[in-house]
Image (cartoon, rainbow, N blue to C red; front, side, top):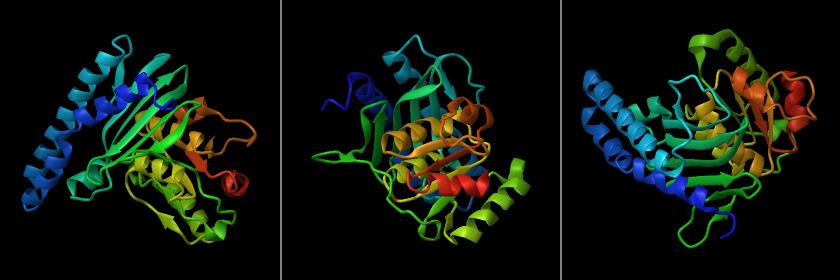
Length: 266
């Protein structure tokens, strides 16, 4: 399969190996729901274990490239952008909407990306110029963004980072609801973008998104035929990934809704 290079295959295996304990940990959480302190310690230990595992496994693939997580300030021309448990609040509450997200970023562009949800046994992967796919038992499913053309029919997802941008985010959600009345907040940005790439969502609007949370998903949306923009950028004809990474404010859409959603938020 020409769309799965040795590099991408290695990253997929590294993610699955590193996250092998997550499914078991997720099942164990049900036994801890009456202990708030116990849950916090358990989740912290799960996160730390996967983070360390990923650093070890990814260093075997490219020992010359640093591994950054959502707790780090990302610097340099090449790095692995890693979110060990994206949607960690969902995970802590026994909600299956969480994932491990890993992307190799070079010169400001994600070139390989993997998003893995062990609770639902879903693996999404993409490589620059090779397409985006969902892993299947016998064959892999090519991801394509939806063909929805009207905002009134669109299902849009967004972030819920109300701690830092509550007023702005509330205005954005209000604007979405005025146009579509279909808004979802899942709490897992990487899965939102993977589902957008697969046509389950039609657009994504996010504020204060960390590079490690969005890099793999950005690549999947692009490879599935979607558009990536910095929220509020002036020219829709260009893609400005540096602005997306610097600001963390992301607008991702299918091709048909690109202009219409851009007009709502410009």
